[in-house]
Image (tube, rainbow, N blue to C red; front, side):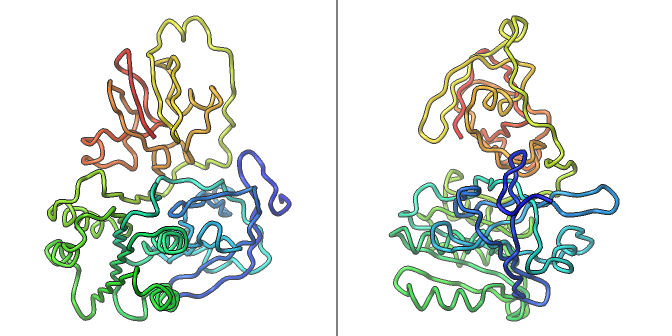
Length: 349
């Protein structure tokens, strides 16, 4: 087993400090922070390696609920799901002192501007990345933060005490709207539209069960929020194990690749990169070969970490993975699945 905090093939070994029971079916796993070995932004997730008797291990993604720069520990919150191998194994087996391997943080579900007014819409365990965003925005930003949070009943509200404390500390900037299904029924699109109408100018982040996210997105669109201001967090169980995938090998670009290439301009973290993009390779492969620190995690298209927007030109994808029809219509792509079609392409991460 790796030494705690050591990096192996792009992963890091995390030591469990404690396990906190949040609700009868949700636990927070608190890891000692490995320092510079793992940096993250609010709303991002970790991909944990979980032992499996059948396959040796499986990989599962869990959002961080801690606030970067403010919490001295890393926290992921895991809610049991029916027949969910990863969530049940973690809730049943993990204890203080255990060491779990994790990929470095990933995900694009994070605000670019903490001074903007933020509308966070969550249900159930979808509160996990939203709490990270709430805390970071309140500590480091200046805008208003509105949290709509739906649950079955009071006993299923994760982080109830933490939310009360945050509201007591920031009553002028934080608004919390609770929705309890045992009192109000399921949160319909019409109900969400009515409750969220006052916040039509905010930047919105949605996380929760898929039916809830679809309804919330539709409600926000109906109150006039532009699609560019609506951000969705999608998780799909990974079918492959990214911990066992071979590292990208940097090789010399041959004449054949150069002859059958497109030109690509990539805007990433405010820096513009221009180069040839061989049609046989995915965008992520080419960026890594060029030494560009591109966002990615599973490389299957399922985690959504490598989402980008096509500004001009055409691409094709082997799989649409975490994207839905609306995402594709808006020009979103997955860098790990994308190959060029047109001769010139411009893409922004």
